[in-house]
Length: 103
Image (cartoon, rainbow, N blue to C red; front, side, top):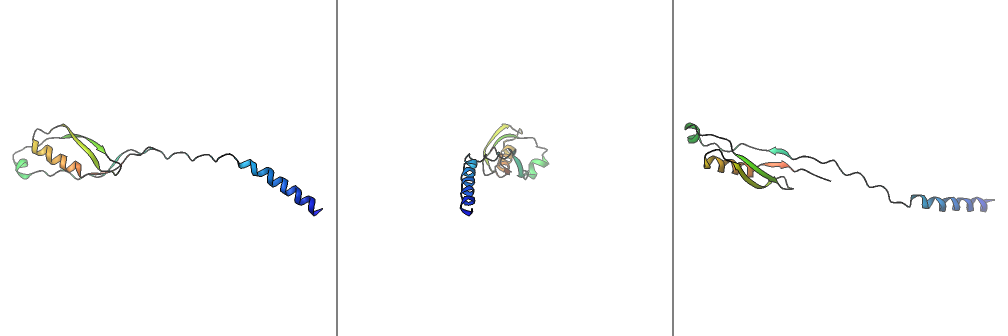
């Protein structure tokens, strides 16, 4: 009788071995994240320009690398003063971001 039970156990174990033959489902990819500013100190603003009332807004197109650092900084619209534009660009080049992710 022990032999028969042992035979049935082996048959059951052999039959179950094929049940898990399909590959497990891959986990879903992580959700995407958007770029986020981490460290964005303002540009230097020379006292002599401030005293003369010179100011403005510089707008840049910034490409963020996978390391979170700007890899390209291109001036789109200037402040009307080349020195302010250059100081703003220098500041942006030193900024730090959390890069966006996909999959």
